[in-house]
Structure formats: structure tokens, C-alpha cells
Picture (cartoon, rainbow, N blue to C red):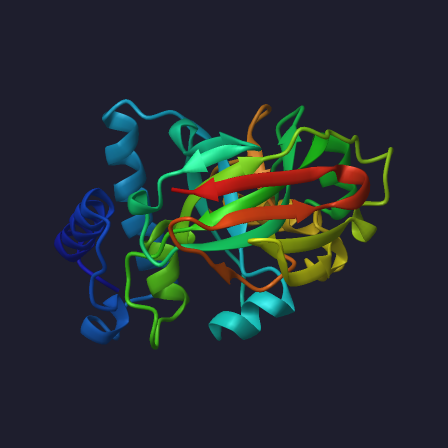
Length: 261
């Protein structure tokens, strides 16, 4: 376990990396004794500093929920981070690439809750009952820790590598569509790069919402009505650079576009 001073110092390092869009050495290389609990403590200090500075929390991201993402990162268990209101874009947006580090795109579904959700025994059925609607989303990854050799401790400390999300316009209640079969065709500059279906996320994309509610219970918290839950990618991450145009076709859930400038 790390000391409170170490946790505060690492949170400050990550905050500075976020401000300067830079990368710091791996935490686990410097502190091999660091635990998952330490990493959530680091993330929590960073989160609270942002809330104190006036940012508004709008939801949570869940990461590493699919085999595709676990194989791409070498990390085998899900994680979560926080999302602030100034990180939410709508389809068609121009996104400043200089605001992020190690910029990649992931294909996901997001869920908006109509009622609170809490563990310890939250199931997929409980999650579906609490969800108001699903909406397609792209996540912009933003990694402030060197990628080579990183572990889940590094990723969680870095707010689960969350940078921003782009929300689509099509909203579907869970009883209106079979969410397991939502497809995705991901294009960069009109060239197809990745394909997938939403069942790649834990066999049902809302399973991650139940997992998160149970995880929150361990920290004495719950998910609140109105929160956006970004449920995890069902494709591998796609690298993007300045000038790249991104389009993702979700079939019955519509199309999302954005451009990195």
C-alpha cells in the first residue's frame, strides 16, 4: 500500500500531465508495491481536485470489458473512471487532438440511468430496469502514463485512460432493441478499420453497468439517476492523428462522425 503522501504526489503528477498533455513514467515501475486500491485512491484525489475546481461529473466510464480490449492492453479485468461535462461532444464535432495524449478511439454504447443503481447483488436484469436509454458513443482515450508494460494499477490511476466521448443521436430503450446485436463499422478517412458487435462486452453491454454498481458498493457508493455510463469497447482501440476523420456506423443505432483538428 502507498502512503497518503505518495498517493497525493502521484495525483498531482497526473494532473500536471493532463494540463500539459504529457506522459509520466509508469507508476508500477517506480512503486511495484502499489495495489488496485491505491490506484483508485490516486484517481479519487484527482477527481476531487477537479470537482473542487468547478468541473461537473456527468457519469462513469467502464474499461477493459471485452476480450478485444483485454488482448490489446494485456490487462484482464475491467476498470472504471469518471467523466466530466466538458469532455462530452456530439456527433459531427471537431476535437482538438492537442488536448490529449496517446489518442485512440473506441466503439461503445452508453447508458443513461433513470433511477439509482446499487450493489452488492446487482444483476443484468436490475441494470436494464434502471436504464432509461442506450445511445451509441465513441470514447477518446487519453493516456498520461507510458504504455509499454503498464498494468491495471497504472491505467486506473490515470482515470482509466478516459479523455472524452462523442455521443450519437439515436436513443433506444432496452426493450426496443436487442442490445447484444448492435453492430459497429469503424472507419478512419473512409477506410474501414474495425468491426464488432456489442455482445463482445461481457456477452451484453449492460452487464458492465451491473458490474460497476457492485464495484461501487465496495466503496460505499452507488450510481445515481441521470448518470451516463460508458459501457466499454467492443472493438480494439484505433489510433488517430490530427486531420483524421472518423465515422462509425451502428446500424439501427445510427452513425457517429467526428474529426480531429
